[in-house]
Image (tube, rainbow, N blue to C red; front, side, top):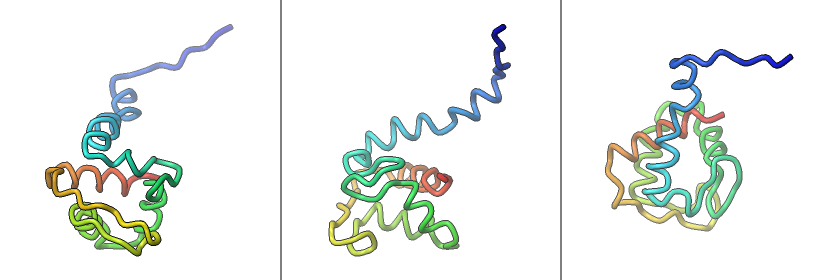
Length: 102
């Protein structure tokens, strides 16, 4: 006998609430050229970024600045290019989402 889970609008929205951010913002901003969610590519995995900054009260502001201006040294010698072409509100959305990853 097959059993089917009940899918409600709320559970579907909860399950996929970050999908637009991942697809649209990460790809459009160029993040996926260097980052994946769970594996190091050129830059660190986004889950590793979340873990590193989890207990940092100023993490959101620090990461927004780092994404916007670029940087070097936190994750090794490979620099992160500046992302001045990405809108500030999109950077904030991306950073807030990254910080929720576990």
